[in-house]
Length: 153
Image (cartoon, helix red, strand yellow):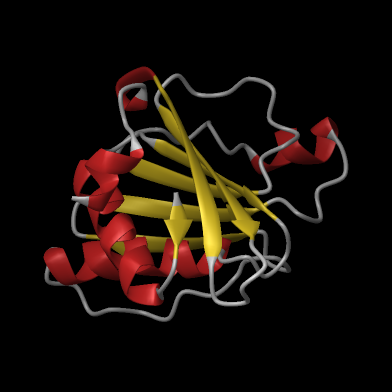
């Protein structure tokens, strides 16, 4: 799917947020600066607004590795694994140890080998036009039937 504006990306992120449930996981792949954190910000802020929680700033957790957002009766854990170099470092984070009422959004998930059953994988790619991106969707488990059409409407 070709994304031609931030408004279009917002619509897609809102639709993802409406379909996401506790214990789900979203994997975000793509080059630095392609829009992974922007997409995460849109999802987090949409859920905060929907649940009547004050919208917060959503930053890239590249140096912190993790930012958490408590939203009503669930939490979003936003990981950035760019600086993680091996499976030992990954295991120390304990990403999948806390599963109850927790949505995980993970940037740079390449080192994760034991992947959760219910996950949505998104790959964001640069295009020739500076303000356009391509997003490729791949759903697993409860997300397996997701497609571009369902996320655009």
